Length: 229
Image (spheres, rainbow, N blue to C red):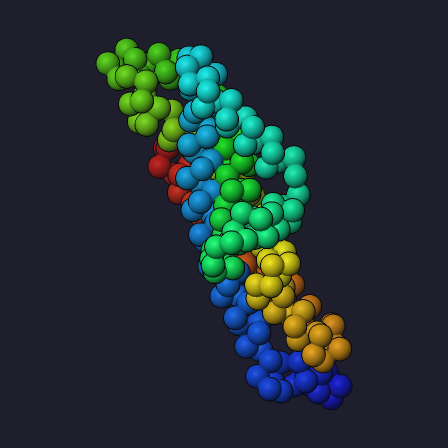
């Protein structure tokens, strides 16, 4: 017990090293939140374009561009995308690293969100489209008021899983010198040469974040199911 207390003091109390964890946690939450917003915006846009093309045959050029985007993003590692955006795309621009990170993760997440949402849209029965048309709604109105609400409910669990994956993927932000949660723990480990407690603390914090997100998604799913009755 005495050894544990001493190890805890060395890793977190001495010289205020716990601040590395707090700073990293703050950056991780900011990156995750902004990346989720970017991913949702891109994902829904791409999903609507692709589903529109699948159902009507329109927007061929936009659909082709979306397919290229999906192929490139889903076919390359997230870390490589992060490094390319930092060292190539933003190499000559003085952009904060946290902006680079949430743009990279947002672009990556958008590809997966797009396919999740598109699958939800395509799963909605064709009769729903016909019902909307019979009520005098045009295609956009049918999508907005009838199809998208049903599609969102269908894909909510998959979207929740994608957001959890995104949260954990931000742990590679340290490769561009950004102090995220994982890098904060690694800084402490590099100073104290004691890996157990810093890495364990990081793992526990990630676990708490994931459990909290899972709980919130579960509450939202139950509320949506209740509203259907």
